[in-house]
Length: 495
Image (cartoon, one colour):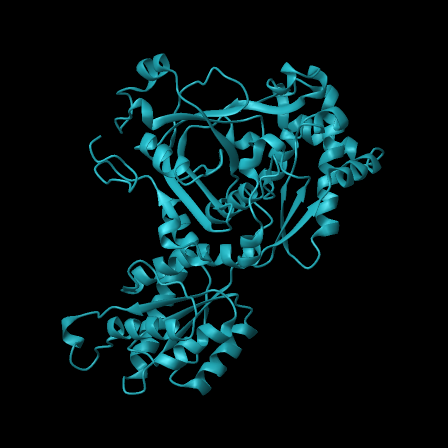
């Protein structure tokens, strides 16, 4: 899927060299790493200046900045100069990674030993002394192919960091009264470098009404008709939905200000339907497919979670309620013993939202009405949901959240969406995550996470975990589903 609203990472690499080690060793190792990276992953700017001292450091930085680099790899081809290499991190101003060269062969251990394994220890200590943060891979010492793979991971991590530092979240309305779980302090957004613009629903309604005669509505309706195809079961509401979509697009363009990237936390009830005369789910799904996630219920951290997952997966994401248990008969007849992992019924649940998942992530789709809202409202003001079962396959369930006392925490769990018909309504799927029952109790409930979870349609857990570490979530606040036999602190040891 061709996603927009994301930065393009241009990565540079600078090799460093300790003055009592041969500079040629760092240069040759850098060239080999660049060759490996280019062959596997594409373009990278190779800085010709190798840094031994602070003068070299300034010269090298000038080269990478002139080349337009917004992410930097500091490569310890040998032991490296402790101060100068860390000043590269300090003065570059963008995300940086440190990696070190492994020794190639026994025959080089006398004259061509680089000792970068040792140098990485000193580099990490110098980062700490200067209160600096650089990305250090799980095992940061490797041969050229391994370092190239580390750099590719870093490209994703850098994309998130660059985007968040240039992101604005636009929200409309206060969080609904009975959804206080979505209400979280915004202080941590500023700590992450994000700006937020909070607006009234009345401002949005005024802008919507001002778009009533927008000449672009007809073309937008045609685009919706083409996308929905046979699923276009509510053609009478498409003009209003198109009017709303254009309202949001124009609002984003007019209000992004100094920021390059924008996402939305919208409101969909209780007064939205009676005033706008539809629900916004389908429009939210269309914007998500273009790289602008729109959370509902003014879930600001939900929108942020979606966007982080989009940056990592480079694909459309969705936001779902961790909603209901799987019925026992469905489990017994269609799940038990039928998959590679021996899922227990407690490993399964259904993820659901009214209709905000884009068509590309649904096995089938139809435009319908919001069944829950229609229990107390006329059906015609609840039209606008996009319903269908989620496509089966890999999935990652995750969220970043501020607690009520403004602490940042996150969770990540990998699993799958099962090829099991839901027989239900909304955008919905049957999920299976190993040890979900314990994770549900001792992380989601114990740690006070809200009901909304962001979903990627891939296994992105490893990189999401690295991203959360790099952007500043404390290690003991990054939660995941513990494997069987590994006890949660609050778990009863006699179970």
